[in-house]
Image (cartoon, rainbow, N blue to C red; front, top):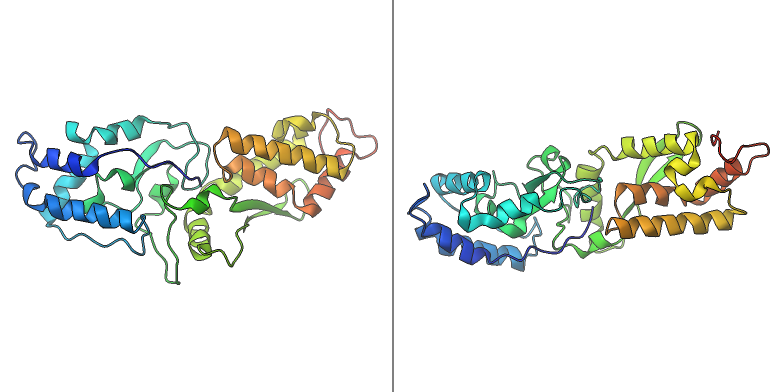
Length: 288
């Protein structure tokens, strides 16, 4: 989960240029619907990509098929699609927070929203979490929708953390939402976490990090090669580690930050300090 800058693309100009290209199969079928499509773009922007407020754009099945095909094999007028596919594959997934992206996908699915199949503001660099959600964009409850990395400012906030219980070598791990229930987008945040983040490999990732912590603390947090002098010192160390992780990954909800934030819970912090400072423990040895 991460807030991204919006792509700088002149989408109306791109679709108009595409419609005039007599070398593509969609010619001349797009020409009669260019204004309809660009009006849809304008409404999408006015709704700020909110899946609850973006209107369907009615097009013929034939035109919808052409737009989906152009997404799969972009002609020159849609070069932004190729550029977005190649850009920053190694960075954090803005949809679930995993440590990579690897694909370019649609926020509003092209199967249901074909008018936005080549619209830059609907194309999100993500990992396979976005494929797993299928056509899901909204829920049954009020305000339930997926978050949009280009428009939802709340994605820049710290929204989730790991929650460790039954502490030991194999704790029980869940995700906790940090946003206040009074947050104006709480329903959307909770829905997004439930439908996308929780269905990713995040709990397995955090579990592996915990295993590294128990095997040798500095494998999970480099600064733990030295035992902190107190619980407060440990808290300061972990907060610094989390801040560095946030900066390294340009956001507060990457999986590394989710893990470290979980270690800062008061009960986990005390347990970790007790284990680190246990009498007779080798500072370069296992935690347990």
